[in-house]
Amino acid sequence: MVREVVGSIASLWRYPVKSMLGEEVEVSKVTTRGLAGDRAYALLDVQSGKVASAKNPKKWAKLLDYQAALTETPHDYEFLPAVKVSLPNGDTVTSEAPDVSKVLSAGLGRDVELLSCPPEAPTLEQYWPSVEGTAHQDTVTQLLMPAGTFFDSCSIHAMTTATLARLQELYPEGQFERCRFRPNFVIEPTSRETAFLEDEWVGGILAIGETVRLSIDTACPRCVVTTLAQSGLPEDLNILRTTARYNNVIAGIRMSVLQGGTIRRNDSVWLEKAT
Figure 1 (cartoon, helix red, strand yellow):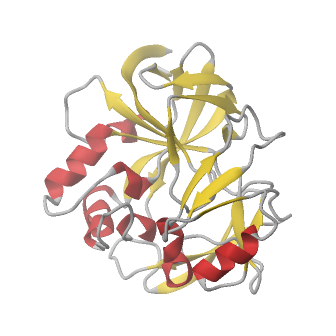
Figure 2 (tube, rainbow, N blue to C red):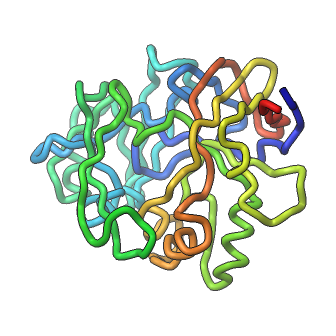
Figure 3 (tube, one colour):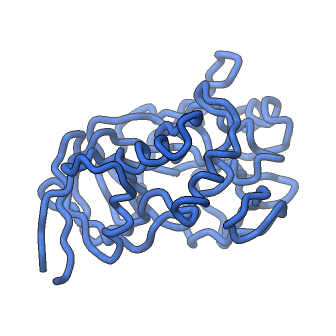
């Protein structure tokens, strides 16, 4: 087993309501389900029975105009604090408000229900734009989510600043900001190389802080969400086209939790790989 420092935590993020903008934190508990409070809530499309996701922007692009923040620091998923949602018009509503679902439905133009408990078999719709190299073209597919969660697939997602910098080199006119990719944490690598560094980490283990150990299960394929207007950024399909053309639609890594604990911004990140 080889163990080396590969970087440090440059920023740390949780997204309390699925597909809404999230919040940056200085420290977070890591549970077997991921960062405490991450994707703790989601909206259910009452008409379809599916989880609302910006992966189908034809219905849910407006979700990226909403900001979600927990009212207290969470420690696990058993006792969730309330979430405060900031609406595009400047108003706010909390999950404790009796009319929260009514308020969100009015803003989104669809009948939704705010959930903190996932359906038994949660699913969502994913739109695939016409981008060469992606699995489908100009169609909507159904994605079966992990049981008991509001995640698309993995419990933790990360990427390096080196990957963002490499994509920016390949498409200088684009704006490759962290928010387009929605990672739980961004790693500032020790290497000064501008490259898709974390691609080579797949199959290894990331060790962070005193106890946290994460299994790097797969590289992270990107979707239409990276191209949508959000946080002052314009809609730009070439964000996804660049990722597809130069790195097989991959940007970042997907991980599961081997051992929980606490992680903090600026913590060193160690990579362990079999020799």
